[in-house]
Image (cartoon, rainbow, N blue to C red; front, side):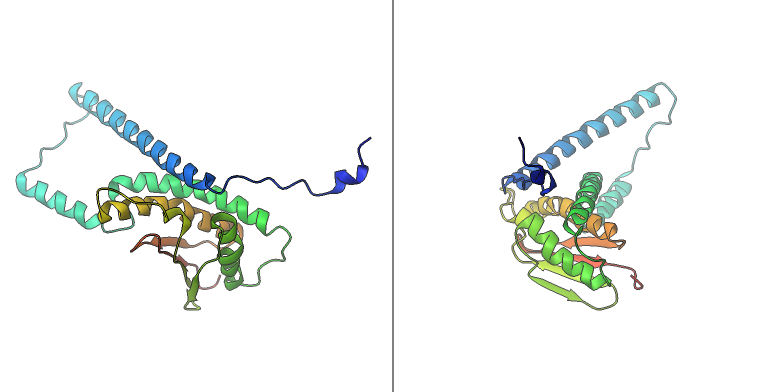
Length: 219
């Protein structure tokens, strides 16, 4: 007969391989990229068929100077967080991270009292959440005490093994995609603590990474 006291005990801890998150992100980015490409090709084909059937006006033909302007504007936009062509992929990765971060924060803070202010919540992110997700605490935390926090990780785990044979520029482009999911985790965790703001990652030399968090001043 089973011990009735065993039914009152906490369930046994379940463990997964430490590399699982790395493999998950790699496969997720690849799968979403293929999905986005297929979707874009399908949409372009439908538009072309509708244009040939007279249901849509044909696409305008750009003159040479207009093409140069278009290329220039695309180059200017590429200096942002990610390239325009990757923005859809980035937003989907961040949305997935939102759900993961919210659930993790709820699980990790279930036995804690409510956070007294935003700084306590950020410290929770730097310590508890970081250890749970990336096996270490944040290396440095800075704030201007007006709602802006900068979290610095000198060896951010999702970027420790990222590289590209195409050179540094391609490595940085890929790295910006691979931090979209962690940025979503941070934002999701904050939202579960009723702190709604923006999380912007910045990468200059992988695996070094910083996350700038901006919260409302009255948070």
